[in-house]
Length: 149
Image 1 (cartoon, one colour):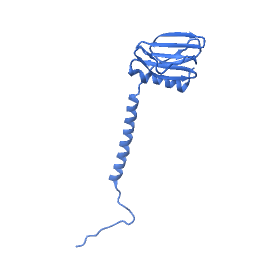
Image 2 (tube, rainbow, N blue to C red):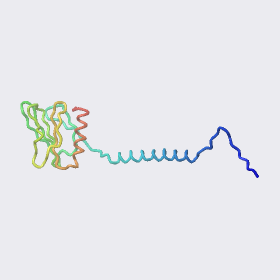
Image 3 (cartoon, rainbow, N blue to C red):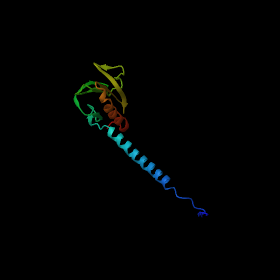
Image 4 (cartoon, rainbow, N blue to C red):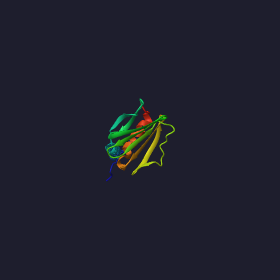
């Protein structure tokens, strides 16, 4: 007894399993990207900022909210202005090219975290809580990017 085999010339059998695996890999990759993107957004912290005017000028700073008081020292060449926060953090500015804010300066238990010169104004912040560093850095980054208005 002989068995007859038929063969179609020029056609390969379809591999549905390979196609399904490829589709599943693409679908899984898509969902992984969506999940990772949403996790990144959930870790982002939104901070509140306020526009604060430098005394005797029409210049405004973008600073974290929570300012409790402001002190000013007026000199012929410019001013030093200090913004005091309820958590004892401080932002210090100098509009005076002669009055430098030095990186070695410290105010009691606070250490200078960052000093920038933005549009000719020296701005530094001193903090007591490390949790606020990112918040103050975000404010300073915005001022560096957008300038003082």
